[in-house]
Length: 333
Ligand code: KG4
Ligand code: ZN
Image 1 (cartoon, protein in one colour):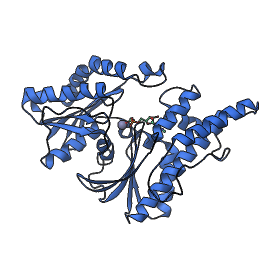
Image 2: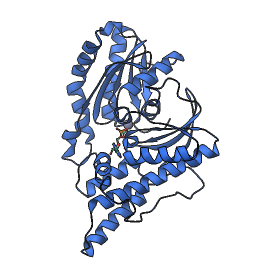
Image 3: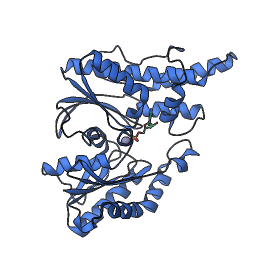
Image 4: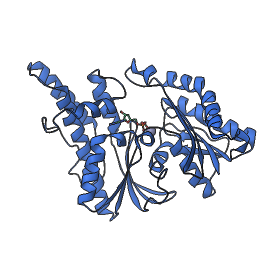
């Protein structure tokens, strides 16, 4: 079962050819980061136009790399739900058109669900049930994965997503876009205990998250330091901010695993690439006798392999999408 998969929900144009859900025959991502960097964030119209410019070239590259032909592909899949509408439309229409021409199934994919499946790419035997924390630029969501196509959303953010908070802090400090990797790198040379920043909702007896207040508290801290002419290291601010985000995410996820009596935690989404988050999860999971899995960094951030892997499981379970499927910009699972 060879699936040609597309992911164009935001500013990366990604095409992958995945065989039987796990064998990666091609995986190509064209990043638009440089284009959007000068605006301090993704400009939707520009993102969509750049997907159009490059997507056919990426299909050619993927197909050549695999030594197959488009007529050999068994199904076409694309992210259709959750993301920038204009961007989603490009990948989805490309997949639908190929599906129509070659009379093969089309599978419309939910972006959050695809991130969750990034953990299955290299691990066919991922334990089920597990708790998956998906943290990216657009979402912070805690899910009990009970089986394929059987999830329970137990928590999410009430305001900013975790990655959004990283990006906004970086934008304020004029450090660049995307902010997560930049702050992660700076934090390595900073003291995470230097400034005591809030851990929003950490003590609440639910699995909701909130990062807007933490972002504001960090911006106020910087303003006060500047106002009082105090010397400060940007690395200490980055480390203290990152530690507050990480503590909150880890504490709540471990609490969820205990409450639901689940012995496996998985991590996904762009923020799952964060070094401190991975380390702290690892340490806490060992302490609490919980298995911990996370994808390689290239499968944490947006990629088309996770779309191909999820599409394989969907197809195996008899699920396909109609050719009149439309994109949905904002949806959960
Ligand atoms: O999953 P993703 O590529 O796209 C969305 O679906 O949003 O995630 C992008 C987000 C951005 O907010 C970026 O700053 C964040 O992931 N990110 C990180 C790191 N690498 C990417 N955040 C913290 N630490 C990182 N190393
Ligand atoms: Zn994503």
